Amino acid sequence: MTEPQSVSTQVCIVGGGPCGVMLGVLLARAGVHVVVLEKYKDFYRDFRGDTIHPSTLDLLFELGWLDAFLALPHDEIRSIGVTVGGENVEIADLTHLPAHCKFIALMPQWDFLNFLAERGRRYPTFHLMMQTEGIALVESAGATTGVRAKTPEAQIEITAKLVVGADGRHSTVRALAGLNVENLGAPMDVLWMRIAKHSGEAEQRLGTIATGHMLVMIDRGDYWQCAYIIRKGSFDELKAQGIEALQRGIVELIPALSDRVAALDDWSKVSMLEVRVDRLECWHKPGLLCIGDAAHAMSPIGGIGINLAIQDAVAAANILADSLTSGATPSDAELRRVQERRAFPTKVTQAFQIFVQDRAIDPVLSGKAIDRAPLPMRLLDEFPLLRRLPARLIGVGVRPEHVRTPDAFYASEAKSML
Image (cartoon, rainbow, N blue to C red; front, top):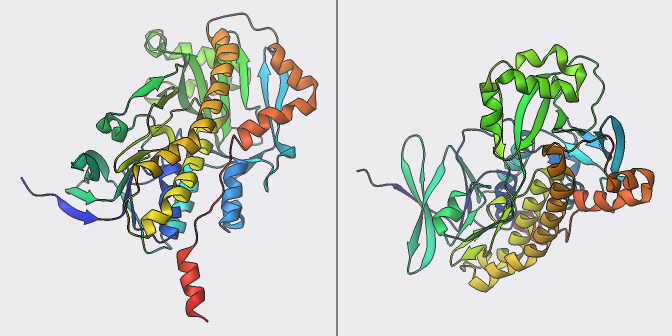
């Protein structure tokens, strides 16, 4: 068997989603040699989160990248509303947030990732390896010292002072590391699909809820990206009823879609996302750290998971950059500081999501008659001041991070000009 190729770096990040790429860019910007592994050949995949929250936009402002980012095609959400039993209800108002951008930007995640990757490539210590999948951890004397990865052509062994698992809710890294996971439960799964959008069609409210059914529609220009919420584990039962059962469920929620759901004529046009809400008891071990969904899988409620993962990346860079730039291996105490910094926001956010799951989503999916919005939603709708509370949690979150790492290359260029 051919020996794997060898690569040496300071940090190897497994997973090229928003969390992994953001961490890679921030560390490379500080002068750390970073390799980011992404198992797919590009970022162009449907059914990923498209929300860029105000706290993330604040980070782009701090980095000096906000204007360039907002020049990309995007939509802006300043308030969040749902339709419940035919009643329109406003539940969050982002226009009062203490942020540079008082809105959520809606942008295909591939555009966001390409933007971050382009910024990363400006730094000579940033290396993004596409079509490269981490498949094993390399260990020595009880510590993780690297990653074994595969590409379409060969295997690679990457030696690193730190391995970061940022590979999502189905994290290979956390499984290989044997880290214990606490499952908090979720009553739902999500079916993702495309439905054609007619020219000039009015903007849909973010969510529509009726007895037994929920649908979220995201405007993608010439089509709607739709999330149809089903009871946990009921996908096989729905498939047994035939694709017509899905079509009927969608039309019951949005009758205006009756003229186009026939295009969903095969289950191959539907992708099932298994919803998980969990978190690691310990996010780290010597030489290894998990962040983002690899450390705490989030419900899709509010699109908060992306925001929380990016905040993890910023905190990790802030805490670990000094050791790494000095050439040292981050200590267990430093890795523990990352978890301690981010554990509280994680627990508060997951508690909020579980509250919404238990009080709003589970009753709907269990078939409880829905003829009007639940009392908490009606209060939010009736008293506009209350809408600032969910807006703060969704848009900014708990303990938002700020970029503390330097731009080492800008500093060196400025010094050379003196």
